[in-house]
Structures are given as structure tokens and as C-alpha cells.
Amino acid sequence: MARTDITSILIVLPNWLGDAVMATPAIEALCEFYPHATLTLVGSFVSIEALKYHPLCKRSFVDETKKGGFRLLNTYRFAKEIGPHDIAISFRNQIHSSLLLAFTGSKQTVARSSWHAKLLLDHAVETKEGHLVEQYVSLVEALTHERLKQISPLRLFISPYTYQQPTLGINPGATYGSAKRWYPEKFAAVAANYADKYEIVIFGGPTEVEMAKSIEDELIKLGINNFTNLAGTTTIKELCSHIGGLSLFITNDSGPMHVAAAYQVPTVSIFGPTKHLETSQWKNRQSKIVRHEMECAPCMKRECPLKHHECMKLIEAEEVIEAIESL
Image (spheres, rainbow, N blue to C red):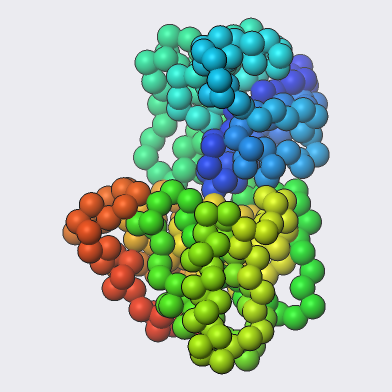
């Protein structure tokens, strides 16, 4: 049942882009339970740039308490700048996030169960195993004492870009580490297979420019020239918008993968060392996963600890093309 007495909610977002996007169903649930509340968002630069366009977000802050000086004191000062709220909820499981909520003096404070959450906050919630979206939603359910009948899809409030032609996007990067990255020549082979049907856009962050250039070089070798390389050139808002307008997306397990899910872009996701049941696209109606069952996976490591990277290396372009055809 919706409550009208809650007028302000502070939300500490996850640091990673994908995790922040996966928190959006929980945020929408909060807005449904507390329809008269405005939102204050706190997070990394990336997460704030993606989520600050929510129509109920009245204030947003980039958390820079790590930068310079004593972080505990920085957190206290930051909390006083933010001020008290009716509800303060953190989707991070981190001591400084618990301290931040406590220091704001908010009426109700909520986070995942941990020794610091139990010590500092009103609600330390035990979350069950399952998709990360469900874990985030369980914090809201514990706060409201109501079970959601249905969890919403992912949602972003950035308008999708309008391409002039059907467009295929490829995303070879993954900020978490090299273990999550498929190979540039294989991305290029898949893109080349569809170059007669789609314009091609290569995505990537500032640290992935070289990888994107490798794909560009491979496409040129294959005689393909109807591509645009956006790696390292887009803002977070532009990245979300350009992904949102795609006709088809090929990607590693990454933040952009979840952005695509928020726009219901038909997507093939390539998984290796990570838990596909926990971080796959949430409620994308046209989504396929390509992965190999391995004894060593999911290892959840940033780099392959066995040095062979077979969870990704053994996946062939033909398998991804087959997944695309099955969408």
C-alpha cells in the first residue's frame, strides 16, 4: 500500500554502471510505495550520470570521499552536506556507505546485512542468492514489509538516439577486467557477417580505445567500411542514448549490456568467468547468452587465474551468429 508520509528518499547507488542500472527496478518500487517522495542520489560519477535523469531525482551527488584527507571525516562532512531524509537506503555493501547513511541522521536507514550495517543502521537485510535485481529489490521489500507481485524491467530516463539506418552495436570492453572480454577479431567476424544488413557502431570506454581500433582494423581487412568507432568519445549519457537506439547489440557481460536491456534492444551477451544467473540481462524480451560450461567457471576473477582464458577463447563467432539468428 502506497504511503504519503514519506517525502524524501536518499539512495546510495552501486559504483559500477551495470549494477546501478540493475538497481532501477528497486528504485521504481520505492517510487511506487512512496509516490510523494523525491529522490536524492549518491554514487560514482558513472552511476550518477546514468541515473540522475529520473523525473523524481531532485538532487544528485558524486561521492568523492576517497579523494584526499581522512575518508571518515570526509564521509561525515559529505553526510552533513546531504542532510537527513525520511529514508536512506544503500545498494552498496561497504562500511563508508553505512557510515554515510548513519551520519545523515535520516529517520530510517537500510542496507544489506553486514557487521557495519548491523551496528550502524536500522535495517540490515539478509539477501538471498538470485539475480542481482532481486537482491536489490529485497531491500525495498524488507523496508516496506510488502512482497512485490512483479518486479519491473530495467529503466533509464535518457532518450534513445535515432539512427538513420538499422544499426548493429558491438561492445568488446568490460571495465571489470580482461577475463570478461571476448576477442576483437571474433567481434569483427560477427559484425562483418551482418554488414550488408546493418550499419555498425563500435563502443568502448576511454581505456578500450586500442581494443576498438583492433576491431576497426579487422573490419577494414575484411573489406567492411560502413562502421563508426565511438570508443572513448561518448559521455555516459551519449553512450546510453546510442545503445538505446540500436537494432541489435553484441556485447560482453558489462555495463552497456544492462543499458541495452533497459531499452529492450535485441542482444547477444557473451559470458565467461561471471555468474550469468546473477548478472544476465533482466527481462529483456529478446536476449540470448552464449557461454561454455567450464569446470573453472565462474571464477569471478578480473584476469584468468589459469592463464588459458578458455571460457572465452573457445567461443567461436559462428556460435554468436547462431544466437543472433535465433532471436
